[in-house]
Amino acid sequence: MIIHADWIINPRKRWTAVAKKQTNHRWFLQQPRVVDDPFSIITNLTPKLLQLGCPLAWFDFPIGLPYKFASIAGVTDIISSIPLFGHHE
Image (cartoon, rainbow, N blue to C red):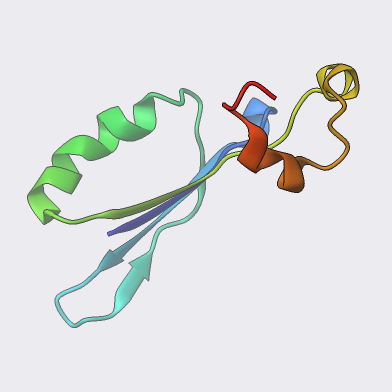
């Protein structure tokens, strides 16, 4: 089973897509669904995942900082700033 979750600030744009490998070694792709409750992903899928043994899950989280915080902190480029996080700089 492969699970992809697209996580964004707008709840109407939070989607999951699930693909399941069938006994004939082909993949069955379920229709993407909007996720109403973020915690429901794990709650609803846990029994299925335990049966399968080794799922692959991918979560697409937004990476960034609020503009005002970034301005105060002097962050102009998020990618080059990531290694500095957690080092009191």
